[in-house]
Length: 367
Length: 226
Image (cartoon, rainbow over all chains, first blue to last red; front, side):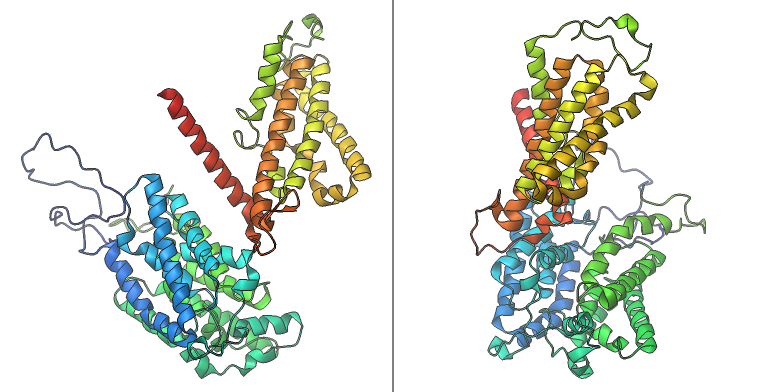
């Protein structure tokens, strides 16, 4: 995960062993026979190592989430802080229990469990009860990650898996949203813009109250929704930071957001009385959060640019389909999980080019 | 039962000369094996379609298991009785016809005497015909064994299947509704963990139970090994 995958090997021999990724406990060969230093070092790729660790990456992603988190706390008050803390603590505790149980090294200090917990918390409604947070954290880390072998082996984004299990299991609690109130004092139940749209569609009342949402409110984030998803501005800032730090690449967010924009624009153009304009779909729901922070998860997304474009397109397409005609108001989490399960086959048909041959290898990199 | 002369047999490869006799211990082994050691769901991963589809409650699992048990006893005994008359080439169609007959009997009986339950289980009662456990025991066991052993085996495997379905249904009902056999366990304030009574919960629950069973088996094997 630390190394750029498509980087061609260079002539420089590896400068000793740089810090290996602390993913698995590495077994050192027995040092019984100190051989003389060889003239040439032959070793398998990767040959370029960077002084970067999982901990550093996770730390910078957490930093990128800071604006959206801070805005969510400002908007929804202390209970949102409670929800986020429970999710983070629950995730870290589950990671400790799973790794102790499996007898592997406890790696909570790399921050990946805390990041999963924070992402999970950001997708929950601000008034979520405590047990929702804990069940979500256990499902996300236990069933989403450690059942498959821990970080780097999970086929699905753990935070989204936790959220979807909660959404399917506890629909009443998971769709009880509140209008943003100053520190939650005047918290009133209120549907999200997408929820209003869905309700109007089911009752065949056109677009309903969703049209009253002002686009500037949506951009800055003054609307009901999950803790971390409302502010397009804060999420864009975090996403651009990640792009600048090169922890994510442009292809998945651009393909996903572009597909959602194009798809919703098409239907808006066909019938503006039944479908909302693309800017509404881009700025409501969890789309921005998911496109920058969840779809781009390096463990659960394809390897090559072509693969990432296909992946992003699929996420966007499924989002549009489920949002416009599906049974749930918000579609992003289902779309990404469904595309997560397609990643192995995308990787198989979009293999990275073999260095120097100009042709893709005959078979995919994964069996 | 087992005195039929093997000379009357067509020379099919699938047919083995009937064992001349059997002991009570053998019957006990045939019965016991199916309960856990060769449990259809937890050990052989067979019959998963009904095991996953109908086990939303413990009662549904029990009913499905008992229906399958009845079909298994009837089909295994008739397969065993006719084993010397069925040519090996057409044995599978012959077994299926026999199984289908008994499934129809069970289906119509359930519809008549337990109509509500029949409505709940719906399509999955007729689908017992293609349950691989039933066909598997008929072909792999009953068609080569005398009647008494075939019955002992089918009862064991059928009871094992029933127990597995009740266990899976119980876990799913307990988590998904907070009740067991329709009796409330966790009280009215329990928020139903709905995913466990929905299709994905069937896979998750079965996967977790298999993991627990394998863990238990591995630990037990280690203890024996030491």
